[in-house]
Length: 320
Image (tube, rainbow, N blue to C red; front, top):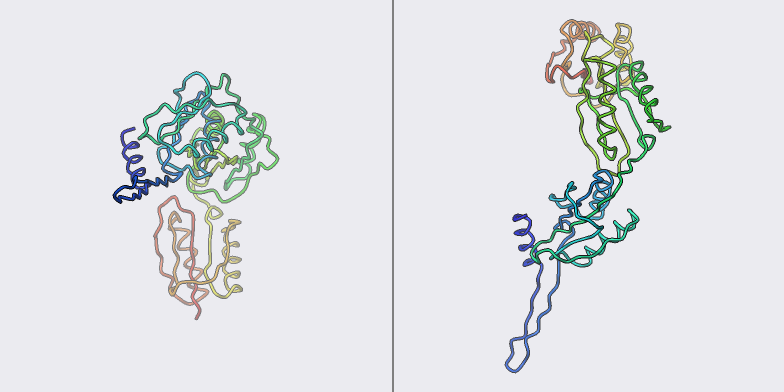
């Protein structure tokens, strides 16, 4: 609170433009212009409904109230109210009216904080917490094993996650995780528990990645990390200015078993014939580099530049 008040005081002083006429016989006149920015006004919401309050806070931040000290807390008073001290009245009214419109309540106005304190405190004591329906959230499962992704999605459908935009797709990142924005924490815990029941060696790291207005839930399931690696697990990108040559390389490697559907050909190779990788086993590396060296009659430099969890393989074929 002390830091907030210091910042508020400094901002208030910087925002005052005072001019005076100090002529004999004249009454000194002052013009005071308030130049406090929205992001200098912390919004604190006390409530027993963190989900609803979080969504409201996200909407206020989109309107410019993006102070680092914004917070939703569990402590609250009786009665719906907005409290403030030195915050500009226009901002307080904007915050209060938006809350009233979105929540369908009436807020009592109470200017009872210190004048040097720019905090705006919303008191939202909802008697009952009404969680949104599970069907409101769109679940996307990113995985290299479509069958197991479908298995998890079927479990989630049975629990009520029935959004018609739900899907299973390829391209998971390197960690088992779940990312979300506006979904209640209870739902996230439920999904994490369901995945753990299906596969004992899967634990989803939880990351609240987006604001409360976002209805997406992303689940990453890179099963290749749990198994002896197979050729299909590795995503090969051929950098070559000749698309026909790049396609030829991918076709030949696919015959060897490198059939990841994310394999692709891109332009702008670097100046060296090389293979860059992270988690590619030595056996696979020698197989790929050996074929390339035989095909192009060039030595391909092997560059282990990423960590062992990375399944990318970059092949550079510069113009000759």
